[in-house]
Amino acid sequence: MNEILAEQFLISDLSNDQQRMIKAINTYIGQSLAGSDHAVAVIQGAAGTGKSVVLMDLVKQYLADKRYKSALVVNHPELYKAYRELGAGIPGVNLRDIRRPTSLINEAQKQHQHYDVVFVDEAHLLYSKSEPYAHYRGQNQLTDLISLAKVVVVVYDFDQVFQSKMYWSKELLFKTIGQHPFKQFDMTFQYRMVATAAQVKWIDDLTAQRPLRPFPEQPPFDYQFFETAGAMFEAIKAKNKAAGMSRMVATSGFPRIDGRHNVEMDSFSLPWDEWDPQRTHWAKREYSINQVGTIYTLQGFDLNYVGMIIGPSFGYDQKTDTMTILPDKYSHKEIFKKRPDMKFTQQQYKMFIANVLNVLMKRGKYGLYLTAYDDELRARLATLSKKA
Image (cartoon, rainbow, N blue to C red):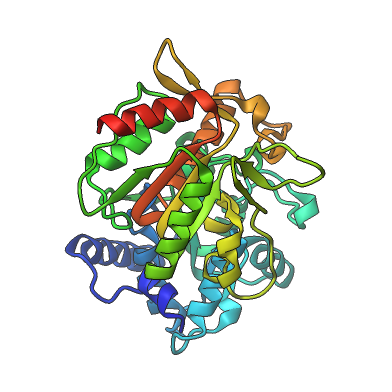
């Protein structure tokens, strides 16, 4: 089993809070399996609160226990690879029980199969509308999973909603659950980052377009602001050599230059991450140090140090002293896809874009290195960094 993945997802030294959470969810699953209705357990928490660690402890129990027909599903292709790799090293786990949701739903409906327990990581990535191009012709993947399983255990973070086709709100979640019994399990402690609560709040305030202030620098979390992406890349390469798992990441919106759609800024020019069908997820590939990661390759994964380029779709408002969001400069148009059952406001689209930045900034366990493409935003952040 890969040591990096095991360290992130299969922690043996669980905290007291995590142990209590696992015990409580286990009790609820047992009660629900003995009941007469289909039931839902909702594990809710922000990025880095250890949701996947709790989930994997439960997955190990149920997927290896042949008394139950159970499965783990995830709609994130990189995370799916990681779970398959982890599953291969867990005694008693059949890799056929680790699935993408569309695959499990289509097969189970066709063959009239039913499950005792289905676990869903990153459930905010489930389709909440039909996606025929992805071979999903239902209307809501959670609805389908509830109908197929006695108990569905879902992990949600509503601040990780980035696209209209995967739109989830608390209202939509509870409407989808409907009259089925459910219980919510909230996780609040930050496990990924060694950052203080004040440092995490600084990231949240920045992406929520609140007035800017100096980063509350305090060891052991390493925050550095760079006036050039080229200098930041050199620092990230040094960290990758010393500590491993350090990568450059960016948000969308970089213009094409001479036919290239790279991330280009000052002396820095690297291609975006590339989809690869191999089992190894993006952050573990050695050559990915020379690519720029996105939400599609890094959601759900830890890095040691992240070099974050705030892209062209973010600017600066001098009057309010806030970072601004510029949807017209956001080039990844999947975010703006229309759907017949729902209309989205400009403010919601801005929220999707802000969520992408927030999650990427929280990828680094030990440090955040930061710069911005927009000249005014970069200058303001640089000034604040000198005051810290």
